[in-house]
Structure formats: structure tokens, C-alpha cells
Length: 495
Image 1: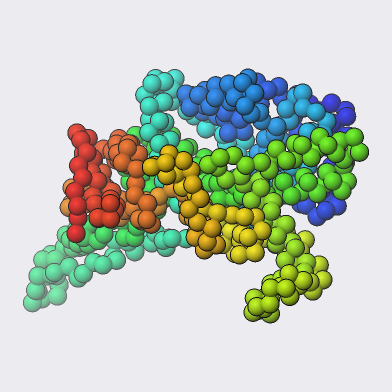
Image 2: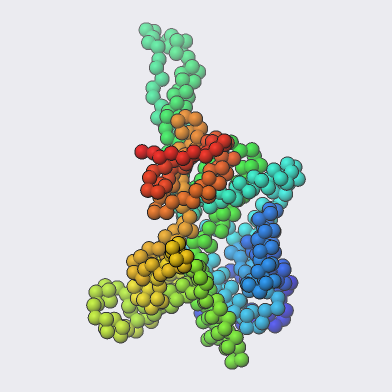
């Protein structure tokens, strides 16, 4: 649904305000959707057309129920494309539509300028539609159950990617075929010839070439495969697993979409904090009418409210941006401030530098959530926001505060954000004991793998690799190998 006149006028005004504040974004196309339509689009990850799968229907039913029971509703969605597409909920109040538009323009600025989004496809709307067409063709030719079953397997492995792969070259480019054959090959033995003119008959060139190729092949087989651990497990399976052409294509589709959504997971706190900072700034300084102040304050407070057992990225991101802005406005950074031991002087510290706005734009461009928290969440912020660590006490059956120590709180938060809080898994051997078995390694960082999830993942890997699969990990402090061979699961301690 195209925008009505009053919303079009509002969009132009808010866009002008956003540009006045220095935000830089792709063109934004707003559409107004009913609650049912916006739930459908949200179930597809914000894209109107994606490949058919039961997971999207399940997510739609969940969103529909939460809206009907009054538990939650979707106010807005915005897609990282060029132009950016954003959806407004039909029936929202005017102040809500103002908030959403200001929020969306800040998101679009973040998508365009943050380093994590530098290599994402800006034409993903069309690519998603192409993916849907290809999958539907496979379903029409092979049957829905077979294709959907394989998609289930791929989706259960979609987190086994290297989220830093778009920015880092982890292995050198492959050498040309002729160089690859010669690498590591030794001199082919030749029969001794007394007369040089007989050499071409006693040591024929085609025989020597076959021997050279055989030696090069044996050399490659003797090398470790892969030469270095591969963190992009999906990419490795796509290249080396014994898949049919349609299966390889489906796996490539799931992997491509996983990489497209990865930067959003890497910058959830920064992105939502940035959008919340700017919708609050634009609304309070430029857009709000006097009659809308109470409604805005109420809805803005709802955005920043906390939920038991969950981190609110809007709240943490907004407060940390404001903390950075205050520090750089007052000069509370650098060696002189760090070495000041007088608490009263630190409280009064104000160099009147006025660099805060410039600094937060710089932070928005260069950081991910992990570096954002690691670099700028300091002791002052921890005390100011009353941060603490908590855990579930099984004896009392209650959640309890376990620590207020700054270092422990920061470490726990960083641990939750690294690799989205998921285990780091990499391929270390794809031909274990020369039997074609796949060996993965879990970089254990203090938290054991969940046994049921580990077993389900091994089963999914087996369906793709078609050979026994094992993962080396740590269970209860002991190095352990978990293995699945298609018949059952085995677990054994290793040296």
C-alpha cells in the first residue's frame, strides 16, 4: 500500500531533519501494511518473497498469536538494500509513525556506513526472489518432501559459517593447475641410457608424465586435508561433500542468506542503539508537537524497558552512545584522565572539547558489538548503569545476582556476543585415518556443548557428508570425541 498524503509529507520532513543531523542513507521506500501482512513479511525475515518452507509458516503463526493476545506487535521493519524498503503498521498513531520513520532513517544510515555491512548484497530483494524460484523448480521436479527435508538439514547447520570471512582472507588463492601438479613433486626416476638418442625410446615422455602426475597425486594425498582448519563449515561442505547438483545449489542458497543476515547479528546492540538515539533526538528536537510529548515518552520508555532474563539492545546501545558522546564532549579520555586518581576532580572533569557527536559517527562506522563493548564499556558506565551478572540458582529455583565486579560483568557480556554466543566449530580433517571421515574441532571456551544439540548437529552433518562425523570437544573438563556413524552415537575420552 502506497503512503497516504499526510505520511508522504511527514516522510519528507523527517528525511530532511535526518540529513541536517548528518545521517547518510540510501533512498527509503515506505509501505503501509496491515498487521496480518506485516506478520507475513516478518516471518520471511522482512522479504516479501523467499523459498517455501514450513519454518516461515511456524514463525508467522507465532507472530500472529502474540499480536492477537496483545503480547507484542511489530511497529516497523527495514531491509538492508539499495533502495531501503521499510514497512509501517497500518493503524499506528501519528506519533508512532513519526518515531518509526526517524528510527528507520537511522537504521538505513547504519546499513550504508557500518563496516560490517560493507560486503553485503544491496540487491538482496531480487536475489531472495531468485532463490525462491530455484527452490520451487526443484520441488516441482523432485517432490516437496525431498527438497524440504534437505532444506531442514541445511538450516540446522546455517550457523556453521565464518562471520569474518567477508573481511579476512584466511587462505591464499589456489595456484594454477599446472603449478598445483608440480608442487611437492620429486624428480621421476629414469632408466640409465648409454646412448642419448635412445633416451626417448627407453624413457618415453608420456610414461614420465604419468609418473609425475602420480607422484603429485600421492603428495597431495599425504598432505593434511584441509591444510588449515576451516571455520566456514558450510562452504567446506559445499565444495567437498558428495552432493547432487540441486543439493549443492540449495546449500549455497542457505549459506548466502546466512552470510547476508550475519552482520545484523554482529551489530544488534550498535544498530538498535543508533536508531534509538536518533529517533529520540529527531523527535525531541525537531518533530514532536506539544500534545504528543506524553505519548512519545510512554512509547519511548516501552522501547527501553527491560525483560527478565534478556538483554535489551535498544537500552544498552543508546546509553553507551550517550556515554561516549559525554566523554568526548568533556574530554574524559586519554592518558591524563586515565591517570587522575582524585574522584572529585574526575566528577568535575570538563575540557569542553565538544567532540562527542563526531566521535559517535566514527564509532558507528568502524565497530561491531564486540569491539563496541570492549572499547567503550568502562567502569564509569558500569557503575552509572548499575550493571551486574546474574545466574539461575537451582537450589532456590530463583535468578540471583552473582557479581557486580566490573571485569566479570564485562567479560560475561562479551562472551554472550562473541560469535553470537554460539560455539566456534571448524573442520580439521576431512579424510580421517584415510577413511573419508569428517573431524571437527570445538574451540572450548569454558562452556560445554549441549549434548542433544551436538548429537542433532552430527546427524545433520552425516546426512550431508554421508560418512562418519566426529567433533573433538571438552566434556566435564576432559577432552572428548563425539562421533556419529549413521547407526548410533559414541563418546570417548581422548588424550
